[in-house]
Image 1 (cartoon, rainbow, N blue to C red):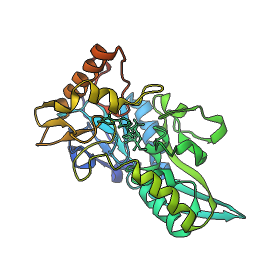
Image 2 (spheres, rainbow, N blue to C red):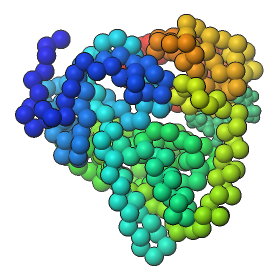
Image 3 (spheres, helix red, strand yellow):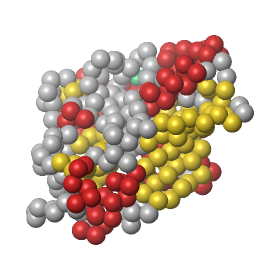
Length: 308
Ligand code: EPU
């Protein structure tokens, strides 16, 4: 592949040859063609224009907590949102608007809301990752999901233009946000809307949400639930009943606590994780006739590899 000549205006935010494994909670992932770490929205727009002009394929990495990145050399460029971490609060009567850069850690907004007694994000207790990633995947728990707190989203389109979306203009589904389907679109900023409440009433809901996580592995390298729950059922229950808790492959194993989590148990590769996930999906299909849908996102892994 020909080396890319980096435009002058992006020279400060582009690096190459950096392994992505340390940026992911699974601790796996290879090296992109180049890595862009924008410091402001204009950097994103400039990167988008450059990518479009040179026809460079790229993907976006947020907190690395819900993603499987292929091993080895990747043929794509990667835009990492970690420096887009500004947060601005404005309070209008009972409403609290928090404008967040795409790379703001969801747990930072959560703790700010908890300290301040602002209600809306209680469901998100313990969810890792960034605001951008959480919105694009409509992250959530049984207690709620991102669609309930999003007020407005700003994206950078493939041609580098900015676009604003009111929450009501966005098609939301369980773990799915309509904005994420368009290739080349990057979430730059989002405004969340919370409401003034009291710390005590937040704590009651948070305790409930925490109790729903008691059966999940902690302190090990995972990426949360690997599969979405099928309608009216639970992927964890199906995987467990299909005997998946006994399965391991290379250094990856299914969590002995919750069958919808795969752990990087002993320095595994992305390929170990993917092969194990595909084996689990096959088991459930053979046993129950249900084809589980992935909740995690993939970077650098061809679609054909997933269709087995
Ligand atoms: N179950 C089993 N065996 C298992 C795991 C689960 O039998 O190994 C059974 C449980 O006993 C329960 C049912 O399956 O009857 C559902 O399990 P759980 O209560 O753990 O909830 P879940 O549907 O697996 C969902 C979200 C989690 C979220 C929790 C708590 C999805 C795919 N998962 O898990 O979100 O933390 O509810 O709110 O929607 C994530 O999205 O990454 C994630 C971890």
